[in-house]
Length: 268
Image (cartoon, rainbow, N blue to C red; front, side, top):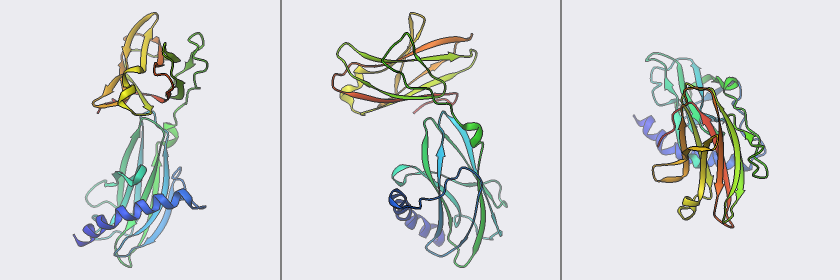
């Protein structure tokens, strides 16, 4: 219990420091783009090694899996790995596969490309920990990024596959980007949009619509009170093609947006 309490007290400071250092250091942490191995000699204040992990987005699932040796009788809380997002926010931690296992795992899914910091830790003084850390399913998770829409021309919309991003300068009578989405039919697909600047005063004049032919069939809806995140669910019975229209009716505001297509349900 003392080890766990000490760990929680120290971890926040260490991670924020590590995140700060990685932004300026010439030798940033290695990328967790393949299996990585290492060795850490523990101490009571915690001993750490760090990796950057880039998730491709599009709702894809990647499992981070760590195995370590030798077995430690009191391994709970003192050995493992944590996943941190921006500003040092804890996004997850490795969970033991079974009660006697020396293996920990964490499933990670993200709608948009996201960079995380992975921290491997050892809080047992003098205990030399050998470990292997690997990202399972990373190659399969690579998401195809659609080209940006150009000139706001509906006649030649860009193809929306998994991810797309762009910006639309606002006009009083509307300014638009268009994407074509080919739905295979007979399955649920969610489209999620995140836009910036995130300010309530522009929320009613920006967003996206979904058309099938000349008919508007859906409009991006806010997730709870967070209006700069919009989403729709599309579930046609037959294969069909949708036209996604990103709009901005707010003069002098440049709308920076990202679109994600995912089979993972989007919700608050």
